[in-house]
Image (cartoon, rainbow, N blue to C red):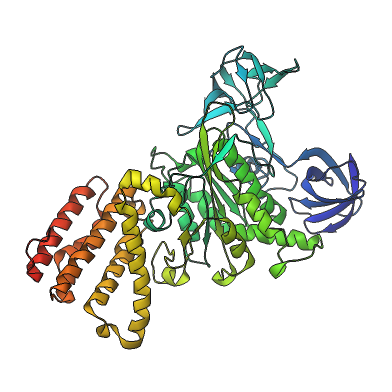
Length: 589
């Protein structure tokens, strides 16, 4: 089925004679066969967004529909790959057309030549349904790729092979209920705008351990949860996302660079292969898929890249893995929506964004969750969605930030003033929040006892009290405060500098386990309690802040993971003795 172009407006073209095409069909446009997708239909007129540069196209050029929606290829070979927004492998495109990728160049997403060692999990005569794992492939040293029956099929295994195969080779045949025989290979194709099915979705019950103290202790995200990282330019969004990608206890990371600056994306592409996976010691790319769609690439592909990434993530989730999708940034994606909406002459909403902005954001974040996978073997997987938001001037009252905050349950608000003060991660503890605290309480109580959450509440209370006292200090000075209030300021300073502040470029400080976080926080709060008792007995605070243990607490976060337990016990013991000697209160241990 083919039509003809009647109008070209940047990435949007209008073609006539498309009455037999369907909404969301992928089309080939012009002599270079540029890839496009039908957005709207009116009679035989179709409005099409083109995923490549449209310069040189004019009225009369041919448009041919493929009859299929925009889909991705799923199978062995996804990991360690770098794709653009519509799943074209960039390394392969560079090999074909050089460093400057030509328009209309196409390459399959999965390598058709490479052979994979397939090991069957089922036998002839077994009943299989959609999602049943029929075999495995060791895709990388870090990930065992599970080959599954596509969700739409079920039947009886008639034959299955073992050995080395390409992704297109038949590895299994199944007899469907109607008697027809279906050949199964290692590729699944799935429409990107349709979420993959599952049996049931559950309330997330375990936290995603990121190793970042301000996140794990104050504002945790659950596995299968959703989070937003809004912040102005220079506040550290990219480094926070790198830390999450590197240290989060997930099996697979899908990093979507949708519309960020080219030099930032270049840094990601250069750094990720160099990053060492703390689990295996090998390259982090062994369990990572990168999707690169920079701000100078066509806006339509930027809009598609979000869906491409989360569909790939759902595929790995269906294998029973914990997956994290990191999108940088949804603001650029929303700007692509705004541009296409304007060219379609739709009625604009707030600040020119389309009226359906919030529903599109919800469609993305709602694909996260903890699910029971298809296949009947009870395996569970999770998909955690983390989106960066880049509000102009750091103003979170703009539409994208507000729509995102209504959907996600964790808000890590980055603060430019903290970043300028060299406090990283620059997550503002007064404006950020998490709604997973009650959901995760049983997990914390089981693993760390009730003291962990009680200490967290005390920490938040101290930091909020500090913010109130700072307003008084600005008016009357610190000398006008009582000893107890000055202690609150001192303890809060310790919490900020010795606990919340974290250096991503120092190995000992880059990651902190939950156990170490709990003990470090308890150590700082114990110092506060001992000093408070000493002040009640008339001891001057200046004497208490000068004890040697106070300085040791400041360096406590740099103690190696296998030594901190004994070191913290020693600090606590010496601290109690030193304060007791000053205050004359006997042994406070």
